Image (cartoon, rainbow, N blue to C red):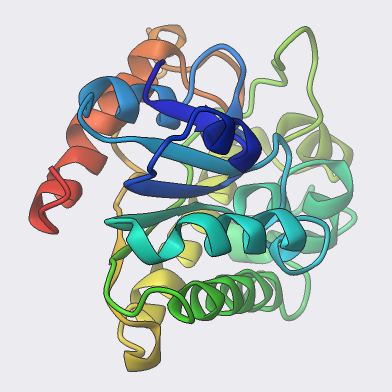
Length: 260
């Protein structure tokens, strides 16, 4: 897309003036299609600059990606109409991260809550929201008024399918922990719902300025039959899926804050 740039240096080389700054993970960076591509297509008059990387965790916004993010803020934050954040998903998926949240053996679990370790998922959600607060306040040092949009993933299916073969994002750790098959998707849904609840609480904090919690989870059809139209693998939508998310979840919120 001619109006979306991945990386600040590329945008500067093209003398681009960003109107939307995006910080995030693969939902902004996924190579086959992503939210940045579909938002840019829907908003051809806007210029999007994306910072982050595939697999980025929200916790890394303050260390691994801090220099890139701060450079993006320095170059563009004061003039943008909105900041968009995609983070938190990679903090909870994958073999090591997911197994920190659930019991070693969930075979006797009768409910989602039975699977969680003591103190989880509250502890990881608090860490994710702490990363949100930290990066938003860094943005506010440059721009007090522009809305910040947060979202999470949609209710994916733990199929074990990855980009070029098997993945260990959802199904693999649940299989290792012997999570009953009937609880697997509900377990991931519960994590996303908890993250949304935390975003709605964060939205009320006056020091954060104007925050928008985009209700992305629950956008795509719930029926398992035909899910391949919407899901490319167990974590990323197809182009149809990303287009649907933009149409139903993101554009309405961008219109409310008069970005479009």
